[in-house]
Amino acid sequence: MSKTKQKIWTSKELRQSFINFFKERDHPIIKSSSVVPKDDPTLLFTNSGMVQFKTRFLNQPSIFSDINRACSIQHCIRAGGKHNDLDDVGKDTYHHTFFEMMGNWSFGDYGKEMAIKYAWEYLTEVLGLEKERIYATYFVPDSNYKDIPEDSESKEIWSKYLPAERILPFSKENFWEMGNVGPCGPCTEIHYDMSGTRLRSQKVNRDDPTLIEIWNLVFMQFYRNEDNSLKHLDNLSVDTGMGFERLLGILNHASNYETDLFIPLFNMTNLTYTPDNLFNKISESSEDEKSNQLTDNVALRIIADHSRTIAICLYNNLKFSPDGPGYVLRRITRRMIRVAEEKNIDNLTQIIQEAGRILELDLKPDMIEVYEKEANQFNKTLRKGLKLFNSLQNVTAEEVFKLKDTYGFPIDLTEQMCLEKGIKFDKQKVEQLIEEAIEKSKQKKKPASG
Image (cartoon, rainbow, N blue to C red; front, top):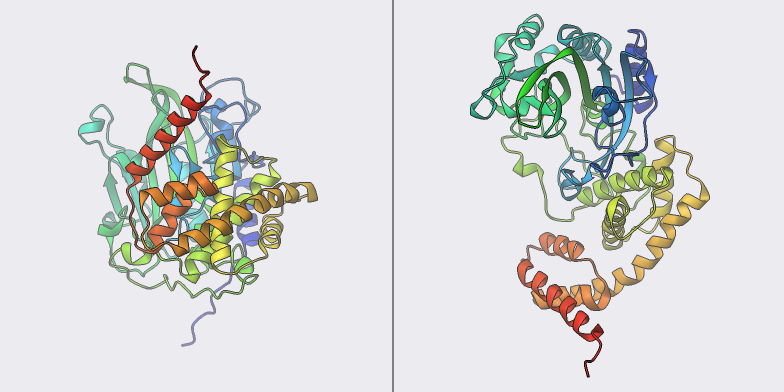
C-alpha cells in the first residue's frame, strides 16, 4: 500500500486555519499588540498572548470590556527579565527570542469543558495531528500548594479523549499565577511526541526536544490576596497559549527552524542547514541536542531568530538604548553581528528585510536606517575586539576587562566566544576590576581640597 503524501503546511495556511476555527466559534479576532507593552512597568516585552488582555482579567477599565471571548496571534519576545531565552537560542531547535503565540480567551464565558473540546478539535480534526502522540497534564497539589484542590475536572474531561496513561498529574508545572497578587489557577498542558506513538509518559515535562508542550490552557478560577490566601472567583476565565513556530514545525514533521518562516533566511547566507531529523527519532537526552560550538546550524538559527526579533522591534519603533528594552535589542543585534562576522555573512540588512517581509511587516527605510547606524558603530568595535581575542594565548580576567575597558567589547560576547572554545575565565575577578575602575574614575573627578 502506498503512503499518503504528507501535506506541507505554510505559515499562512496555519495562521488562517486558527483564525477561521475560532471565528466560526464566535471569538472576535484581536490584532497583535506591540512587543513593547504600553503602561505596564512590570514587563520589558510582551511575553505572552494575555498581556494585552491583562486589564480585562483584572476587572480594570479595558478596551475589551464589551467582549467575553477573543482570539489572537500575538507577537512576543522573551529575551529579558523573568522570561529570558536569549542565551539558549541557537543551541537547540526550539528556543526563540521572538515568537508568535496563538491563543483563545474566555472572560467568564465558557469553562474547562469547552476550552479542552476546542483544543482537541482544532489539533486532531482541523490539523490532523495523531491522537496517539498526544499527552495531557493536569494539576495536583504538593506541599507547596496545599491550599489548592486537585484539578480533577480537567482530568475527567480529558478521559473522554485520551487513555488514562496519557493523562498525567503535575504540581507547579500545572499552576499559573499572574504575579504575587492577582488571578491564578490550574492549567492543563497538551504535549506532542514527535518520536512516534509508543508510550513515553516518563519524558513529559523533561525538556526532551522530541516530546514537547504545544498548548497551555490556563483556568483562572482563584484570586491570590496580599496575605497569600486564595478566594474563588465568581466566574472562571480561560487563557490559552500555543507557540506558532513550534506547531508549524510539528505539522511539517520538522523542527521549529525547518519551515517557511526560517528556511528563506538560511538560503540568503553562504551556509547550509543540516536537517534536524527530530520526527520519529528517539532522543534519550536533551543534552545531545544542545551545542556550545558555533556550528553552521547554530549560527543560522541565531541569525534567523535574531533578524526576526530586530525586524519586529524596528517595526514597533523601538530604539537602541543603554538600558531597558532598547538595551536588550542592542545585545541581540550585537550577538547576531558577531556570529555573522565569524561566518563571513555580510548581508544582514537584507536578511532583516526578508524577515520583515515573511512576517508581513511594512518596514520603512527610516526603520532600517536605525539598525544600520547601530550596526556600523558596533562593527568597528567588533573587528578590533575579535582581532585581539583571537591573538590571546590565555583569556584572563585582565584581558576580558581590557577588551571591555579599552575597546568597548561587550563582556557577554567575550563570555559566549569563550564558551564556544571551551575556555573559562574568572567572572568575579572581571566584576572586581570593573568596580575598581569605576572607583578610580570617581576619585579623579573629585575636586582637589585646599
